[in-house]
Length: 371
Image 1 (cartoon, rainbow, N blue to C red):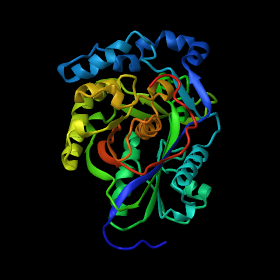
Image 2: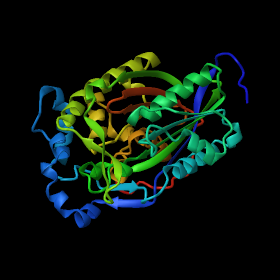
Image 3: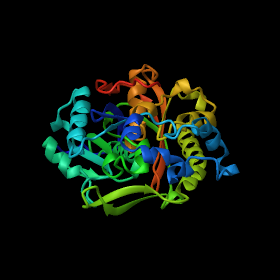
């Protein structure tokens, strides 16, 4: 499976998004954790998403957030979660097969698999080798960790490797399993969901990546931390928890990280905001898509919001926006797309893509809560 040498162009060829079949609504917390729901306004999560620590640096973010402050769930309604004992690798494999089938390829055509599992079920080891085993891949399989920006960082990496002539066909797979580190008794669980996405990048006559820009998010270090604790059965378990003052770090960094990446990617592409047909944003909270649209002065109809249906699915957020936006007919063939993702204690990244010949896997979980 050697690749021809020399630089060439690369393009996104296919995309698939899948979610677990277990649906968690707000009623689950009201029924099973009524005391926690009653105390939500006293929690670190409520403190993070409030205007009690408002400042000029958070003014635009706070304005977008304000309509949701009377809701203890802050706009989250539905989530898809893995069932106890369910293996995320199985969903990763299902999603990868769906993308490969949509592209009209076989798994034997894949030269490289880049995997971003957040968080991985194994301590300090991602799912790449486990997914390669599940798919019976013969090619290299790498782990790439960039928290919630993993999907776009991996996509950028795939474009670079194919363009450089190192590989011909790269499969990018990312998954999110928040429910395994933030179960329902943890306050942060109310905003989180699980899922998986797969994208394929291949050699192309025309470049599919027109511009990119990334910055680190070191300013959010320690906003969220993974801590060792005991689970319900008294066994050691990793838990994801928002730290005191963490929300303020996230809010203060949101606007500058977004604007730096978007302006840099557009400049590299030689395009203006008005020349972008569709905007794919990470909808990790109910107000982020309106927030990003307001910063750029664009109509929200040029984007799509998946938060009501799936909540915060980390690295799946932006691929889901691309996937559902394309299925909804909001991305014209040959059009331009600006994708932006951000991860805490990681990176923010914007890509400008040409959307041409991108095959879509079938929709497995329709948008029902609004778009």
